[in-house]
Length: 400
Image (tube, rainbow, N blue to C red; front, side, top):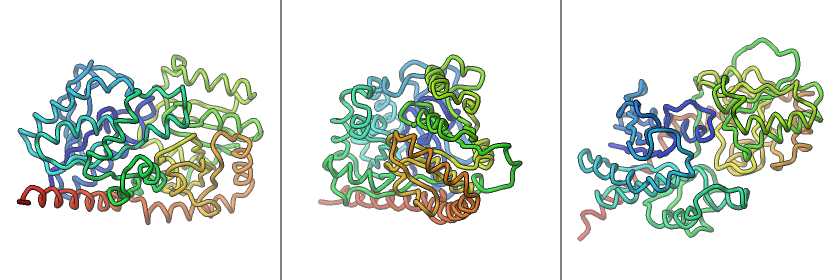
């Protein structure tokens, strides 16, 4: 099957940890790699972010990343990319006329805009994964939501236009239903984890209990709440991975804000910011941690908890979105309400003081990750969706 992955801002080749580089990048790259391994021809279309970037890059995993030359050849915040989607769509249409594809998988709502515009002219079905919904973001962030005002209406329209929606958690399906998407047109397929890369292994113990927060550094990820929790955990350290490259930490406004939080809470000496990290470095960081903390205010899926479980680490997460599916309280970790550093501190303290419980959570988490979230399982379920929508499109094409 010839598969077009459209991911307008989240390039799987990007360094992780920046403001717009996180779980979606991982998802697109890993899914593409697994589908390529299963014999499919996969091309990822992502906007160029540098003038000297290669037009097409064949990855070692067997899929191709094609850089779409629309907009300025530099990093542009994703919330500013909507005006470039008509040009993105024209590029896709031209490419798919020249090299037809069997199915399009759009990642994020703006990719859906470009994909549906292009696909209607070349008669190819479109599968949509939102990765985040504007309704949830607006509800959580209110006036601080920087999304274009058109986003909510466009997402509702995409629910009508696309052939099928792949949701990453059951909570998202319920939200989509409130937006008018019938349940029969949505399938839950979670994000996945490389259980060979993310695995438990022995490391030298740290002198004090260590927490790890890893991911994009934006306020809604709740890193500030994790820092606030340290005030009630006097003998615990926190490592924060993500953000700009280590040499540019002092320039980053979110790093400065988080350092101010640490200073206000009197924990500056126990918080270490290490900046953006390579993908292969994350398992080491997780294995060096006693507990992985992921406490976003909202989260469509949340890849970090699954990666932590694959590494055999207990997770303390927010009881929101995808974490409600992935983390089993009392078995693989604990869930607390978002924006509650007091409750977060209590959950972490109980785990830090109970090494046997941490070990049991770690073993159960590893088993759960291998059983449910291996990328091969995710790819197989996604492949099934593609086959169904492609078959339905073929039937429509031959109908009298």
